[in-house]
Image (tube, one colour):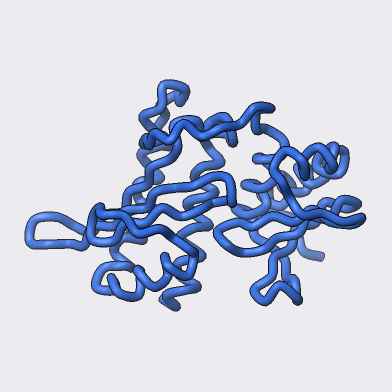
Length: 208
């Protein structure tokens, strides 16, 4: 019998909480498609369904066949539904979330920079492929960096992704900017689940 990891245990607890939520209220709040059994949401332009009866979360690549999701996906979606404030709106001002006045600075912030750095190195020399991947995610091109796009995390929440190619003086770099009101939508820690999954989506589309 497979022993569940702490991540699996945490995700299972959150799924049980989702079962108890007011699904009709959630669907109205975020303008989500729903039926008797599922809530549906698009996460980085990919369709997900959440089972109202057992909390299971699945995704589809062809909008017909569904497969299981990973920890980052599960925790992002469930945190959005469980935590987000009642009155949500975008400020249309972009910030580095680690600089938000509402974030408690910790050593964990520094550790995530390794995630940015390692992925930036993977994208180096693949600018055209990275551009195509961002466009497959329905990104809106912006004039920033060597690759710059505004991409929807959800239909109602954008993120700004900027990539700088390496040169003779600097290593390749990834940057992310969020709407100033991001912490009304999710916990600070959850923004890193989002970024982790974003990198996974890019890997799929670029086929690194």
